[in-house]
Length: 79
Image: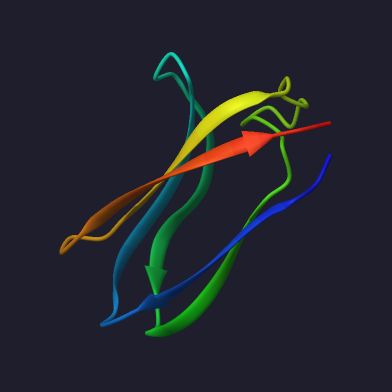
């Protein structure tokens, strides 16, 4: 499994939330849910769910949210 990495320019200190959802809209992983200092961050998802079990190959969505903005990225996980 390849790790998925996303670099983002993050502004002021806000609570940041990064979640991975499957194609059905079920949340499979909470990657980040905390306050962070401003700056570029690398977010890594290792292809596991919240129980650290490997998820199947497929299409997933990554949501990156703060109190000011939200972004959705489409991911393709290939084993």
